[in-house]
Amino acid sequence: MRRQRTEPISSTIGQRRRSLSDPLAVALRPPENESPDERQRRLHAEEEARRVSDDIDDMIRAERKENRLKQEVKVLLLGQSESGKSTTLKQFQLMHSPAAFRADRMAWRAVIYLNLVRSIRRIMDAITPEAEPVDDHEDEVGTLEMASIIISSNGRPTSAIAGTNVTNYEMYKRRLEPLSSLEERLIRLLSSPDEDEPIRLGPIPAGWQPPSNLNSLSSSSTYTNANAHGKGRPTPHVHIPTGSYSSHVSPVSTSTSYSPQSSPSDRSISKSKKHEVAVHNTTNWKKAFTLGGKTKSPKSEHSGEIAGWWDDPNDPVHILNACAPAMLDLWKDQDVQERLEEKSLRLEESSGFYLNEISRITAKRYIPTDEDVLKARLKTLGAVEHSFTLQRGSHRGITWKIYDVGGARNQRQAWAPFFEDANAIIFLAPISAFDQVLAEDPKVNRLEDSLLLWRTVIQNKLLASVNIVLFLNKCDLLQAKLNAGVRLNQHMLSYRNRPNDYETVSNYFRTKFGALHQTESPNRERELYIHLTAVTDTRRTFTIISNVRDIIIKSNLKNLALV
Ligand SMILES: Nc1nc2c(ncn2[C@@H]2O[C@H](COP(=O)(O)OP(=O)(O)OP(=O)(O)O)[C@@H](O)[C@H]2O)c(=O)[nH]1
Ligand SMILES: [Mg+2]
Image (cartoon, rainbow, N blue to C red):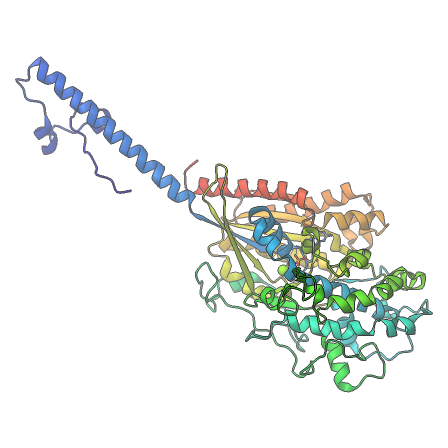
């Protein structure tokens, strides 16, 4: 709104009193021979003018406030890979744009299928008889790379442990063979064929060193800070190893991926399948994966009804459905369970775990639930922006931009350009991971990595005035792990002989992370908000997100001197 400013008329009006030396004040001074009537009229006119002026001032203030409220709040999600950043973003989406979140459900079907197939392959890898040749060291890492590696408490690599032979191994291998080519097909579909840039992580190059300190990166001029849509922001360049995949993989071809006698090219396919599938921010994987190019086929010739994907013979659901009994038998097999236990492979704790729901997931008319989508695991490359505008409540009109970045070590250099204009950071540390190592570097304990990363973020001067919220995440898994008897002090000596219960352990982590903030933050005034979270739990997370949202907005307004 434009304003026609009404100047104060008289020197008698409170704050607007002008000095008598002011020529304008002299000009506006009441005539000396003013009659009582004239005086009355003048005072009335002055009063009216003052009222109009005050109204306009009020309107200007309100307008300014509204404009400020319209302002964007930029939130950056940080944390190591698999800490739960993308899952937190999904919760924000579910909370603020549920229709859009649910519209994407069918696209997530592909990821869920792939997660399930990969869990089966992890089991097959784990129960492979010890006599079978192991390719090389990379296989040792690669076999487990699809999710966090769980190390046995005695520190020995899991494959070195001999034990139970699974009597039915050959039978499972035969029955589950079609899943191998299905996995390749799902990877290819998710890797979006119309994508220019390769999007899957290749093997970690020899001699590769993860960036150890983000401080140096944040002051680097390598990256230009681009607009809010991330255009021009740097994106990490990731390669698919050449020749990893055959040019065409038939959905029904029988692969020899589980076979020790596979050809070199089969082995190369099998090897690259061991790397986790990731999606680049520019990848339109959701569009690419409507499974068969459509979610609905034309009206059925016979019934005239709308038929679904289940009528499409090429839809992956058919292979999954046919293999479901074998998958169920495998997962329930006592020998298999013993073998997994011997290898300390707790698949229940791994990302994208659907083995307890095989029948439901492989049903022909399966539609993912919200919970399924929240559990689905797809690694992020680069940065993904999601924005929404609050429609209700006192913070109506504020636009939130949430940036979700890849957390793997070779992705972290892409974070720094987002630091400059961030209003808040939600840092996720998965505290259940105290007995796990990084997928990208099996020498590094996950919790140690989280603590180092946390320190680097809070020390960063560019972030000195940014609100920091810490999610000590995966508390549900922490609780399950402690209940199962896994002891924190076997992995973290500083824990000594404190009680191994959830309450004491979670408080210990709260204090440890909090103390680092106190000693390392360049801004002593900055408040830290710590939450114990399980971001796959919608009800709990909604409450936390609402609190966090209010804190961030309040503090943002405070910065604007509005409250
Ligand atoms: N049980 C449980 N699972 C969780 C929790 N948070 C995340 N997950 C699961 O952990 C997996 C990894 O989560 P993501 O959100 O993809 O992790 P990320 O931090 O985005 O990982 P990158 O993209 O690699 O950086 C997903 O399968 C999630 O469903 C949690 O609190 N509890
Ligand atoms: Mg992610």
